[in-house]
Image (cartoon, rainbow, N blue to C red):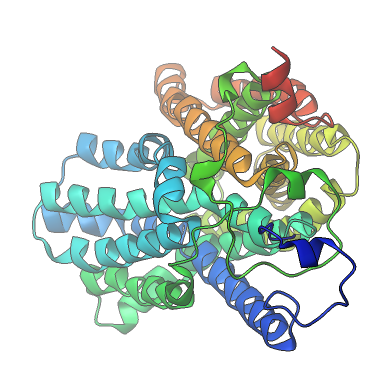
Length: 441
């Protein structure tokens, strides 16, 4: 990436090259240091984007008893995350234009740490919900801006950096689900301590962003249009996000396809996290084993979240990957329908592969826009719209299960949703950008 500055007549002529601030060894060392800091920030931030949700799921019964929370309120609490992601995520581009992406992500980590620290100790359901909303607000803006950070600092390594980010996110998700209960037991059985302990990691994620909060620059559109050879990022940019012309994102068919794809894959993921253990338990699988099967499904995202984005960026069309993930989803749902207990481990693995549509969607966000502001707008639009689409899915599965008295209809619904997911995924995977589509209409 290059920083465009006004050049003097001597610079435009044939004067011999000298060590300018941009080309001096000191500037190179500063850029390398900043790059490493951004990588650490991305990894630590990604680790904190799901523990607030999965740690609560592990202790939900204790939280309900401790706060006197009704079943309906507890059900509402499990539906709040996608709603908050949709509502707060749409504000991220505007905040990034005003304060800079790094500053907003830093503030997001502060919000996550604060919410996680105070929510167990407020002593009321209303306070718990308010602190959870603060945490989810931080997660929402960070969700949207992670692809922007990757595009800005590593435009030539979108696949590998998205893979690292997605792998860390999957690791944080599975880690919180697996160790929250043992940690709670180790700390005397206090559910308050078991939830609050995750604020420590969130607090650590604030630190790498502090030296970068004053950097309000973004990658220029012209820099995004051409292949980038150097793997360094600027310390300061003269072109800011606020100086870029906003993309009319709703005029892009690719943006809509990506939003629906994001929503359908999120629907499948939330259904899997919320209902898969119950499917196995109703089939006769012991409760402990059912929990391990869910952990296996989530852990599959750790290695594949690194591999899939790297493969996706090497293909001119990401449709084949969408198809492979969809076929794995069909196979997993068919197994749950016909032999849920007999092949439980195979179905858990297949659904774990299918759920890796999430890192693919994030990768396509970075590939379907050329400029930093374009990525910010596309990320906010796709994620906010997508999370709104995902809200009814888990609730509908619960209604069908209760009304039909079995899992036949809910599993049929899950499998049926894979068809539109594959179709819109193919459309979103075409080699084009939202800037070109928006300007052509």
